[in-house]
Image (cartoon, rainbow, N blue to C red; front, side, top):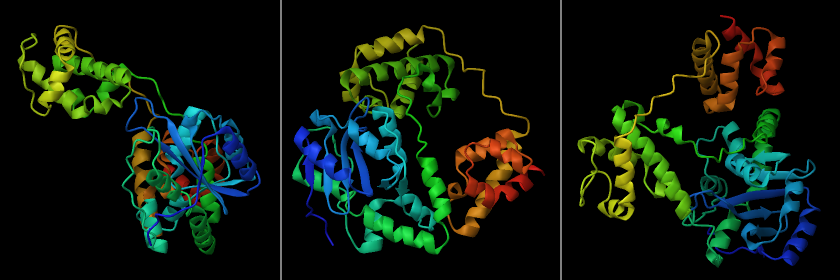
Length: 380
């Protein structure tokens, strides 16, 4: 079944939003998805918000100038269920950019994970469950561009128009397998989404693959290039990787070691870096590299976060137990315990049932289900 026909309302005027809001205020549930432009902008924006109810499909345009502030109240309304597919990124983006919180969540992807599904994409779910084929040609589209084509709008609408049906079918399966309480706890935890860190850290270059093994002067060049790339990305309003990707930064830093402290005269080629790109960024690029070659090399911070005694031993034991438990249930390991919960348990080392109350990321269902096993491991 192809999905190239769908009725929707584009909300890009005050009057259209007023009518949409009136309808949304009366529903008990809504399916939600967002489209952002993280592949095309230095700082991503929410470019579309798709909402489907049991009777209507809406596509809200936040870039139209219409104030959608009232939507935040609906998303946080405990009496309205919000259905997302793979909500984590969307929730974090809405919280970071709009300061909107979401409550009463149902995540169809996580429902599938609890039921043992191994593939998580919405297109796979729809193809497998209903024989519905989604054309994903606009998956990497620039949603910040205007005007929006009819084809793009239909694509966007398809991301929510089937979610309520999926929610009902997956919810029924969760209930039949006794997984509803576990699912609710996971959904509640997802609503405590983190805010994205949106400030640039010049010392972040240490996290690049291979950065720590470079010679001292090459590290100095790498740091300078890392800062240069961010400034250039900000100036052009593009993601940093579209200026120079991480591998190119390493190639340039290594190539600079052959210069004996002097920038080369053009033309100059660097393996792994397109010549056209070098020509476009010069002379500023080579000047920055030359200056870095003659400056003091950066020193890796000696201050590392200290864990409590026995942390890594407990971490390894919990990891092994989590893996074994996941195999028995035929689910992925983080369905049993999230990475954050596992790390908090390894750090705080609870040894009694009352100690588990201090583990902020461990919900009541997980305490009841796995608390005895966790304590047994930690008391070894």
